[in-house]
Length: 228
Ligand SMILES: O=C(O)c1ccccc1N[C@@H]1O[C@H](COP(=O)(O)O)[C@@H](O)[C@H]1O
Image 1 (cartoon, rainbow, N blue to C red):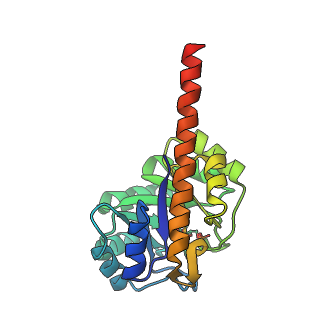
Image 2: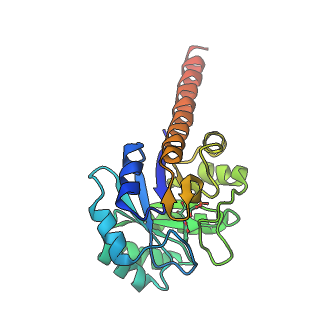
């Protein structure tokens, strides 16, 4: 099974479309250091989270300037999950986790498996994204999925794959990386900050079908091994 997060939602109607499509999580972007059409104010993020139905996991995606600010953001918007881009150290993640009710997901660069290993034990999950030089996501670019597959295999933490995913490439990404979850922002947009609802549905459908097919194949392999 693979979970699906759709990120960069800015309106209630897009949030409903994400939920209707069967996604597991929705991401709202606030307080980032890059210019992106997907950013909303913190109070708007909070309003969108209030509009989310009970079983859709809400995620605040941010690039706070400090651990203290990260805690303030979580307190202000009350997301289920806080996705943090930036160079926080393990002790800072520990402090953030201790001071917020939100689960904390750390974003790591695909080239930094050492960082992923250094922080995995103090966060609730790791998200590997094709980040820009300043650590921001939303690049629309894929990265070396084989390297991320190795992170998934060796890290004792849920690993989410992000970066340049689309309805067309997500099945291949799931088969190659076998992540805990996939995450998409620009790949399901009609225009900057506006989701294309048919693309959101296709993304969720294709990711889920690929995850389910892998599970069936694993089950078959296990049965064959047991009877051989
Ligand atoms: O989407 C953005 O503009 C963004 C800006 C700053 C930090 C994170 C951002 N988005 C995150 O990046 C992933 C991947 O984006 P994409 O699918 O490659 O466009 C996205 O899901 C967000 O988690």
